[in-house]
Length: 218
Ligand SMILES: Nc1ncnc2c1ncn2[C@@H]1O[C@H](COP(=O)(O)OP(=O)(O)OP(=O)(O)O)[C@@H](O)[C@H]1O
Ligand SMILES: [Mg+2]
Image (tube, rainbow, N blue to C red):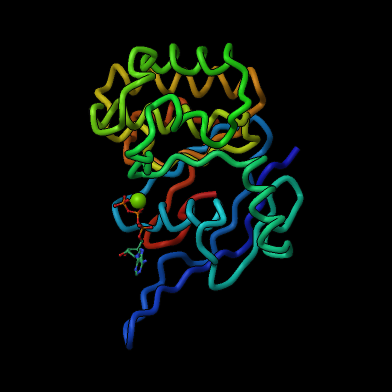
């Protein structure tokens, strides 16, 4: 079953007289439960692609469906609901709310999440002891793990993760990747993960390489 289908996505950023094509005709599909890695150099369009798929930015051309639904055919209200229900997003810059504790940040998208699941996430990510801390009391890697927990709290069908292990040492990175794989298997979550790290390729079911906004392999 297909959870994501993107067709010919292009993105042109225009600033005054300068325009920059960040994505060129990007087409891809992700199946239910599949773990797909997106690799590419800095500036190749990885975050642009993920932001579009998360509905945070509009493509200049092209379309995509999540679980068979074309997001841009929906009203803004319905689009927000669908996104909240189906998609989890880990930002490259975490985007934790500074005035909320770690626990409140994590529970924010799903206040009714069951305690066992919250505990499972916190323990698996090794941040249980920081529950009551505020983001600025945590290291970059700990904040990153809190952002991962937040993205998973509503059991998304699709997890979009922009360099979710970019700030972790290799041992913690391994733990986080193993956790993502475990959760994907347990809950049927599909993962689209952006990384610079070639060593994560072996964890993915499939790798998509981006160069100058274009997919360079199948
Ligand atoms: N809001 C924007 N306005 C103008 N240009 C942008 C904007 N966002 C990104 N770009 C440009 O689009 C290109 C792709 O950027 P993007 O952030 O998608 O790269 P990336 O692959 O995520 O890089 P990194 O690995 O450094 O995070 C870059 O050349 C960037 O300068
Ligand atoms: Mg990026």
